[in-house]
Every structure is written in C-alpha cells, then in structure tokens.
Image 1 (cartoon, protein in one colour):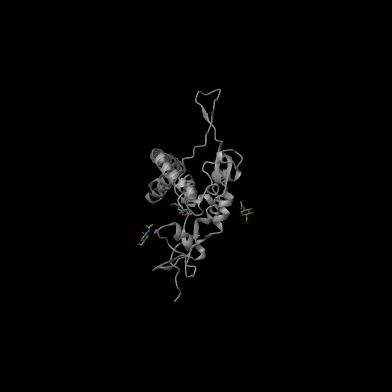
Image 2 (cartoon, rainbow, N blue to C red):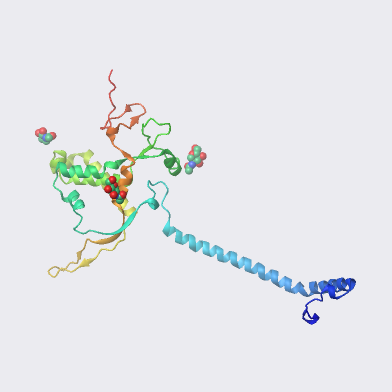
Length: 277
Ligand SMILES: *[C@@H]1O[C@H](CO)[C@@H](O)[C@H](O)[C@H]1NC(C)=O
Ligand SMILES: *[C@@H]1O[C@H](CO)[C@@H](O)[C@H](O)[C@H]1NC(C)=O
Ligand SMILES: *[C@@H]1O[C@H](CO)[C@@H](O)[C@H](O)[C@H]1NC(C)=O
C-alpha cells in the first residue's frame, strides 16, 4: 500500500522506536483534538437519551390508553372468552324457527321440554386446578364426586340468564305455570320478587355487553312514525359449540353430586336425602 494513502504509517515501514514515538505523539495530539468533540458527543448522547425516554413515556401513555379499549376479559370465565368459538351472523330474521318455538310456542309440555333442554347444563363442574388458578380467593361449593380434589360447583351467567328468560316467559302465562290469575300472581310477593330479580339480572347483562350492532328503520307509507327493523349483523358465540362444551362439564341435580356439610346429600329437589334407618 503506498504510504500517502495510509492514515498512519505502518510501524513495519519505520524503525521500531520512531514508530512508537510517532504513535504516542499522534495519540496525545488526537486526545487534545477530540476533547471538544467528545464533550459535544456526550452532551448530544445525553440529550438523545432524555429525548428517547420522553418519547417512550408518551408512547407508553398512549398505548396504555388504547389498551383500556381492549381490556382483556378476566380469567374467571369458563371457558375464557378467548377460548370460545364465535360466528358473524344476522339475527332478528324470521327464519330461526327454534327460537320462535321457544318464545311463541303455546304453553305445553313440549315447549317446556325445549326450555329445560336449553338450560340443562345449568350446573357446571370446574376442575379444581382451573378454578383455583382463576378465581383468586373466592370460594364455591364443591361437588361430592368422591375424589381427593373435587370439582367446584358453579353456574355460568348465560345459563342464569336463560333461566330468567324462562321464568319471565312463565310470567306471561300465570294460569298455566302457577295456576293463578294475573291478579293472584301480582299478589304473590315471592314470585314477583323473583321476576324482578330476573329483570335486574338481564338489565345488568345488557348494559354489561353493550351490543352496538346497528338496527335500521324504514318508512311506512301510511304512518308518519319510522318503523324499526329487527335484523342486525352481530358477532355471536357459536351457541351449539358453547352448549356442547358446557354439556360435557355439567351435571343434573338427580346425579346426587351435591352434599351439604350438615344436611348431607341432596336429592333432585335439593332436599336432604333421607337415610333409611
Ligand atoms: C389469597 O389469600 C392469601 C392468604 O389468605 C393471601 O396471601 C393472598 O394475597 C390472597 N390473594 C388474593 C388475590 O386475594
Ligand atoms: C288450581 O287452583 C284452583 C283454585 O285455587 C284449585 O281448586 C285447583 O285444585 C288448582 N289446580 C291445580 C292443578 O293445582
Ligand atoms: C355438538 O354436539 C352434537 C352432538 O354430539 C354434534 O352433532 C355437533 O356437531 C356438535 N356441534 C359442535 C358445533 O360442536
């Protein structure tokens, strides 16, 4: 390599002493020359670090703010919402004959059977490990399945809501479901208390879920008021999937899996099973 292109002469091209003295001198010269640049670099770096921290802080603030919109569901759901299967579907159409039957079907053993089938997975068992890892310190009754670490007994909110809808449907037919007239039903404080509890529960769920799917209106040529339409496009849980999932983890009262600490084992009517003498 020609010498003039070399930033520093290669020691090999000079004698040993000359080379080392040249290098030392150069280093000393360099140090002095670099002092202001070094100070400037340090200041710039410090300023950059402070600026970056500031940007990080602002970004964190913005990101956390947007996370609040996508708040993860609490783990204390079974199954967790992230584990559920969903579908995008259009509700409110005349087509769903099963739902129509449940709502408009004349009171009969057949319609009652359809409702009981719907709420069959009401009593749910949650494996102890799953329950304890997600429910913090909240306790629940446990099933008497004879195991060392029995499942916990819960009911899922959707089945409580279905139970409430079934009861409100009963309210519409007091003669059939309570052998009472409307007036007698209104006098029945216990029954009315239950209906109100159900209304409250359903109202809470509606407010909690805040469904914002849009519903349209149309004009009736003969009436001034706009008429609301029922169809709405929605994200719904795949009901058949959820039903199957819960059925696999549920039990019936007649399975005799409930045992009160002092009253002992309970029958299908939640009455203590009489132990024959
Ligand atoms: C649960 O209870 C334990 C012991 O009483 C306590 O140390 C712990 O902080 C509690 N955990 C929660 C999430 O409340
Ligand atoms: C219905 O109520 C009437 C009058 O209270 C009573 O006579 C009748 O036995 C009741 N029927 C049933 C099925 O409980
Ligand atoms: C639900 O279970 C039924 C009966 O076992 C089965 O035919 C159906 O394919 C299942 N549906 C889903 C969505 O898992």
